[in-house]
Length: 325
Ligand SMILES: *[C@@H]1O[C@H](CO)[C@@H](O)[C@H](O)[C@H]1NC(C)=O
Ligand SMILES: *[C@@H]1O[C@H](CO)[C@@H](O)[C@H](O)[C@H]1NC(C)=O
Ligand SMILES: *[C@@H]1O[C@H](CO)[C@@H](O)[C@H](O)[C@H]1NC(C)=O
Image 1 (cartoon, rainbow, N blue to C red):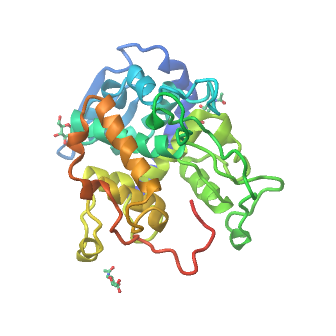
Image 2: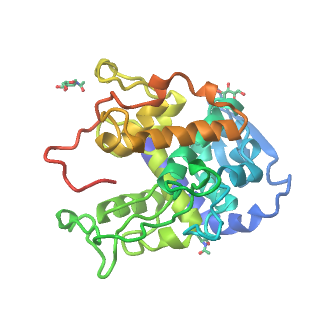
């Protein structure tokens, strides 16, 4: 039921997006005027286009209040440098427009300004790490190169898995190589994300590299949605909505940043010891906290950041299938 409501809200919001896009540049304070009501004992609000239906989360500051365009520019300082691979593609407005769909659900609007900034930093750390081209020796340091890519550059295959031919059949000629802000691979992942954001990504996987709002939307959907059985969403872990069971605790999964990696990448990143792909994501998170003025010390002890010792929520069946996502 809750899911249905969410879905309905999503459809309504998506329908509104076209109009809203026109308002993003307006920056009028009228848009942001807060409306308040009491509903079944709960205080709920609406704040213009950015938090556009009755929700308790809309009573807090919105993302654009706590994370402004200059901060986006700081985090992704090198994305439009001539050697980057998605020059001119990623921008702040696309991010806020995509985020606005999920702000009434608590994305970047949960727990007060400090927590809100931390969630934005955590989400964008995943994005920055996954779209970075800062591995080599280039200027600005390796953490300044997030949003350098919008797609996998030299796909070795078209990522069409026939096993899903009934649910998510590959469209003729379509290729499902990595695209987006949290890159999506494989027809079934495009299909699921497309269902999630109500955009036909199965037939139009290219939308993810043509429209930054859609690319951010798919990534935030992934962050907000429990995808697999027995898994919370990364969002619910991060803001503390999820309570670990005894099993979780035994397998070292706490309500931590480390567990967000577990949900998003499973045993490709977690439970493998102190590996680079994991440390790169953590480094981005700490760097972004510094840049936002929150400070890396707020991130907590290293064991909360790491997932080196965690068992995966859903272990990959052996032998490891070629289904990284
Ligand atoms: C990008 O996608 C958004 C959301 O679906 C839509 O509102 C917008 O018009 C699209 N932009 C372009 C340039 O197609
Ligand atoms: C809104 O922010 C306050 C702190 O300013 C926080 O205590 C509260 O939990 C937040 N509301 C929601 C719904 O997260
Ligand atoms: C706890 O873990 C054990 C062993 O991995 C498993 O058999 C059991 O089903 C788990 N219990 C729950 C509630 O997930």
